[in-house]
Amino acid sequence: MMPAEVMPDAQPAVRVTAVPADANVYGDIFGGWLMSQMDLAASSVASRHAAGRAVTIAVEGMAFHRPVFVGDEVSVFARLIKVGRTSMQVEVEAWARDRHSDQANKVTQAVFAFVAVGQDRRPRPVRGI
Image 1: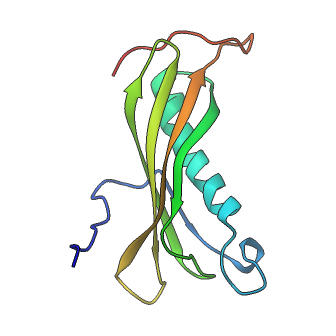
Image 2: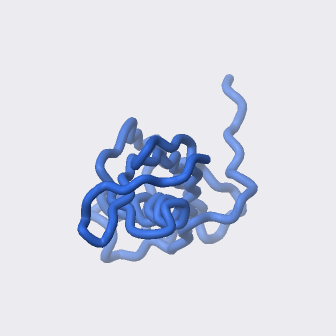
């Protein structure tokens, strides 16, 4: 049996409660809604590191492990893992907690790739890690 995963100890980049408007007819939260929350978290990390605009160019390895339900509190954690000349990779995990429980479960993860862009919307260099 695999050991239980532990939610990161850091502050989440995004924390939100899933509501009925975010769900399908069965009460499961749309994967696209969850992905958008992850993109918001990742873009916060990338734009802060780039000290300006950073745009999402790819999402790698998106895997949904468990469903998210209406009423769940979703915490999204994001951390910079790699920096190129103009690009950045941000590892993102989303965790869900039933509003009446202390137990959280990892529901999805992915690596988001960003490029820093200037006001002309062309790639610009970023500092290393």
